[in-house]
Image (cartoon, rainbow, N blue to C red; front, side, top):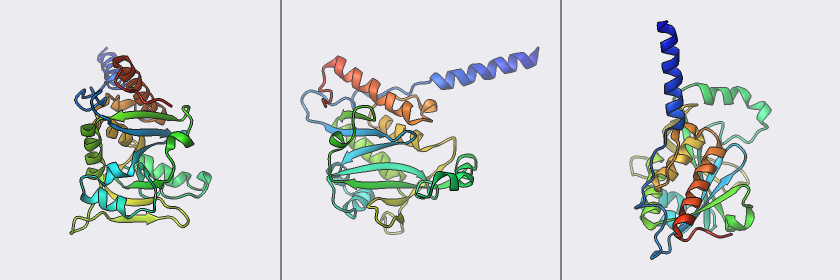
Length: 234
């Protein structure tokens, strides 16, 4: 009998965590009617979600993130992602990387990197609504998102970002991160945390998949539309 109670308690705990929602901050999202706000795009490649942010919004305020952004190749937009320092950067066929993928998922404490990838074209023109969600953040929400990305960057003794990798023929740059990667803290968890910093409500324990992160943005878009607070139009 005690075993049954323990199993029931564990099931209840898992269910509670699975449905737990971290509330948003209406002071940060959505942008109010009297400010232009900053449009960002959430992009889904099927298993990983990147956030596309105007380059100028990342440079604003200075600091290591601004320094890293200024050093990128030209482009008015920057795709931001995060992942394991080895698996995320490697572009070999996935079948050749399965052992390393298992290591990244199941061994705690793996080194990680922040990706900054410059893009010349507005992602709203390149990516259709089936793989993109667009959000209009307030200026304060954008600043909070920027601070969350910057907090992830490791820095050297002079406070500068540390380049970890640069792939041949690819403008993406990878910078050392203070955070660690494993199945309890995956790339999509990290992106959900950026949205949370910007004021969106998230379900942190469900943000394992890119689909859940996209649904977070979809719910935020719908809420903004109900409030008639300038939802982004395609």
